[in-house]
Amino acid sequence: MSKPVILQVGPYPAWDQDPIDAAFDAKRLFEEGDRDAFLAEHGPNVRAIATRGELGADAGMIAACPDLELISVYGVGYDAVDLGACGARGIRVTNTPDVLTKDVADLGVAMMLCQSRGMIGAEAWVRDGSWATQGLYPLKRRVFGRRAGILGLGRIGFEVGKRLAGFDMEIAYSDVAAKDYAPDWSFIADPVALARHSDFLFVTLAASPETRHIVGRDVIDAVGPEGMIINISRASNIDEEALIAALSEARLGSAALDVFEGEPALDPRFLDLPNVLLQPHHASGTLETRQAMGQLLRDNLTAHFAGQPLLTPVL
Ligand code: 8YV
Image (cartoon, rainbow, N blue to C red; front, side, top):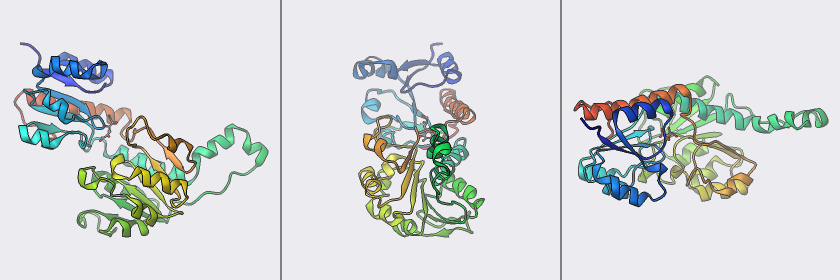
């Protein structure tokens, strides 16, 4: 029996690629210069798309695959998948939730600590000999006991909060409604009010057209010149122009970012800012989590073609 044809939007590690190639006839879009010609040639045979959170599947890609049944996303975020196009055609969508939650929370908290304690600069201070020639490293700001705001108390936001509780931080959060699983943390519905109440504002909400630029100038100014914004969600949740302006003008103390508009080609102005920690969208990037994500991506594909229920459907 011939293997189902799938469209593979981005590369996967060998431990996923080998089983994918064994089970499916994977057409690798990312290896092609002329994407339109590739889609025109292979799209009519494609029954599933295997993609990654940040790559998604746009309307053009979906339209090029008239017999598409499933889009399996390697990542918890599926904002880059055109859900409207999928819904209109009854195309199912799966993601990889839960398996990455704790690693993403770990990195967010690590970014806060790293940035607040100036660890990148401190490392350079040691390596370039400044410690020996200039003495003590400049003093930085404490983390423990201070106020943290979590914008979006879903799975990842909740894990961030659990970790921050270990630092005796005063925790507040914003979401569409108060969560009964966080009785000890303050619910502040309005993001601006949450920001005003926060020394550290974590952005952990799932991105959607409704959350686009939810962190705009008003929220950024409410965090203020002594505060920090940490983004481990999606770049679209923050108005990047407003963020860069606030960092440049010191209206915002600092930022720690794992995600960027147009990544990996991030806005070059970030590179000149001393008060931002830049990370290459790797919050889920541990061996353990990426293996679990790959397994779940493949399990959803396998279940679909075996006529079994999808493990983690979002549509
Ligand atoms: C990426 C992510 O998918 O889970 C998400 O939504 O953005 C990440 O885990 C990861 O970079 C793999 O492509």
